[in-house]
Length: 210
Image 1: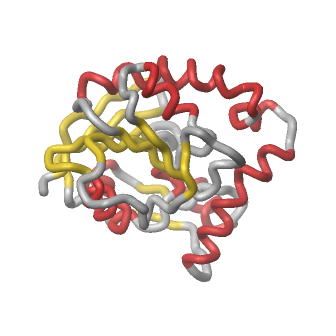
Image 2: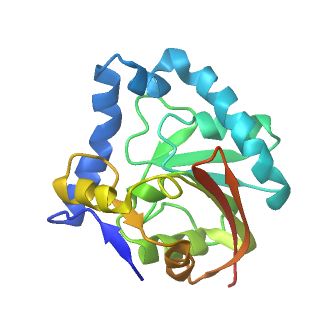
């Protein structure tokens, strides 16, 4: 596999760095940080609802978990789309978040086979693709669906992205050369569907094969 990770001195450093992003974004007041500000929450919900509706036909009824959900706009969007029993997990969900609990998606505080669906658009913030795959497989029921929105794939300069990872100037911690690398990383899953949208992202649906 040709995978590229940001170099951290330890896993503890990775967690600390990724946890700091929300607080730093909230301190700034510019266009790039509006998506996490409380007053913009329902605007983000509508944005996610519009995008996530196309995922629903590939999902199964039941409980849904959103990984790296931050303030929880995607969780609320899925609720509006009919997945009432939805929850998110994030290293830093902010204060008094009704949609997202604090936790690490590499080591989730849930029992085996707790969810029917898992969604994430945070693949570019992972520490270890194999660890993530095993953990998502653990919390999914047999035949459960893993749905991923993957950006930074169709439009970015890979050499530039790798240099950014090495420089430490971004919060993203992971990128790859080819989608086959992602398939190989999620060994516990079988690819069911891929679809390009918005010109720079792909929707991916995996089914676990316990």
